[in-house]
Length: 213
Length: 213
DNA sequence: TATCTAAACGAACAGTGTTCGGTTAAGTAA
DNA sequence: TTACTTAACCGAACACTGTTCGTTTAGATA
Image (tube, rainbow over all chains, first blue to last red; front, side, top):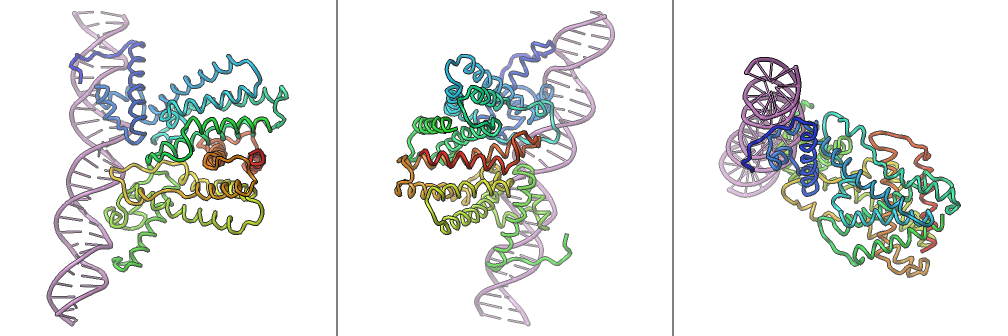
């Protein structure tokens, strides 16, 4: 690609920059072609480097996947934390907001949502460090708010663990239905209205359910 | 493996038997090792035949996947149809039964559930016949019952399409949470009780929600 | 300026899904 | 029974894959 003479990244900053370059390009390819549609050779080509050089920065294709996820979840959880800090009002309303945040994110960046929450990482022989560390904290945020809502007497149901799980499941289920049925390969646009209408519908009943709990 | 002299399957029956053998062995391997953990060579080995011979019966690994799914969905939908026929009582109760049927199936045969509802098929260059025909009818069963419940005045909500989707999403969301959190590779058994307890919890609130609709 | 470390990478390894061409078992027709 | 045809079967090859090895050499350090 470029005819610029190549340099070597030996400082900590330069090395991190190189890693970030790989993560960025990797994400673009993964989002476009899926885990099995991406090859390390193509990635190296896109980055104008040798295939083997990639392995100076990541130990496997699978680890690259987790490096990307770690990045994305950080951003996602930051957005969630911001919502929680900025919120004024009842915890129940906050739970609604969180649900809305998920739905919004899935709508705005469906491919990324799918990669983060619904796609199996590419396989590898060995288990890498990032994979071991990988653990989405999103559910803990939710659990935290549910606990507070219970403590404040806004929710009668006392089983915070199960309840958090259940809400978590409803939200992801709502999104996954939209993903597979509206955005599937078949692109069947159904008689069910557009996404926003469906989200409004779902949120209405999530609200109702919260009030029943 | 076997030292029996090999024959050739030329009658329609013998050919179908051979195909079924491939589907059965393919399913076993896919369930155990996942879509990328299975190779056509290993499958052929397990079946004591040449790799290339597989392609007399199926046009690609991806098509084999869909052949297996078709098989499994037939059985699954048969079970669903039986429940619907045998049911006496309100449609709302039938909806609960259907939800229960899903949860039960996911619990009893989690790996198969995952393969049917949550796993991406292995990729292939060309789109095969079975892939084109592939379309799970499960949601239509649900929609049918919801429509009847609305017609019978058991449910106030008039938007049958959205409502069916929503219920569909809740059930699958409930299962997927259980799958990923209880049965993930990490095997973290949580403080949330066992699966049956969680399913009872979820069903209780699904029932409540249906009564609010 | 000399030394040393590690970034970079071409080539190779062991695997993959799939295709091609030849062999031959088995069904059909004479 | 024999001749003919056809397609089940399969070894070998093709173009790819993720990863490793050994070498080269840029660039920081002494």
